[in-house]
Length: 119
Image 1: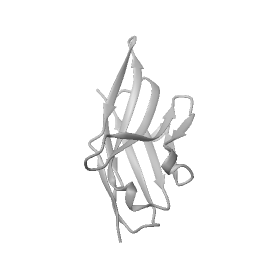
Image 2: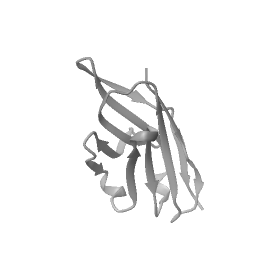
Image 3: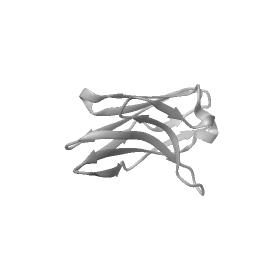
């Protein structure tokens, strides 16, 4: 079983920065994809940034140039560096891991961390 724990959220002023971390525990097999998602009140959960097993990255248009996804395999940790934060970035941020095991793909989610951008 894989468990994911996010941290690093909080209250920040517009223009500020935060770095989110997602630490994985348990036995992880072939990682297909890891990503950061967010869900604002009254809205659907959306993909913010993703990184494949081959380290290819993709970003939601509104965060391009401001957010950077990365991971440290040795630490089983994924990061989201968020700069130039805007009020519309306010949401609960979740990390997700998809890995390939025994012929099937499995998804795991963290519990989420709140990010609030406000003056």
